[in-house]
Length: 228
Image (cartoon, rainbow, N blue to C red; front, side, top):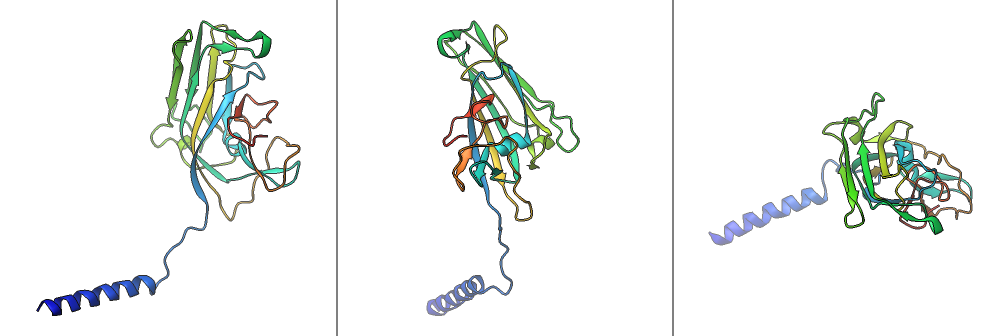
């Protein structure tokens, strides 16, 4: 009796294995690259503005591939913003004029007003006094808000960032983390980077500034290398 049960069990297992290895209908496959990644940026103080508006094109421009020494393209076609975080201490101006500040305020707002890209209206800020604490604010797109869904490259607003010292200057060295998901599409032609590059090695991957600017002119440069 036990031998017969083993035989029947073994037969069922073999049939199941055959169906898996030789299916009558081929399995569905995903033919696109998709990845989750946290990008980190550091404010430079360039431009003097204590806030910056970030578009979906800016985000996709921040991870690029060089086609030639002077031409580059977005590595991915679509992006999803999962969470944004900012950390800062009261500090302004670089070099010999560097100075501590009495306080710093950081803020994030998902305020997109464009149809198809609407933000949740979510906003958060926090202030730190002196150097004993770090101002930290973290915010995710609202539940079912379009700004937190897959978006293609466009000039629609994704979110607004602020890092403001007590004297209204931009906080130098504030750290910004963008938790993102990326994916590409075989039917979408790679978009060219909006700000021209120079001196790149064709085929190399580079990190750009958070606002689409180049290394010498961006509001917040990438903390990763190689950056351009």
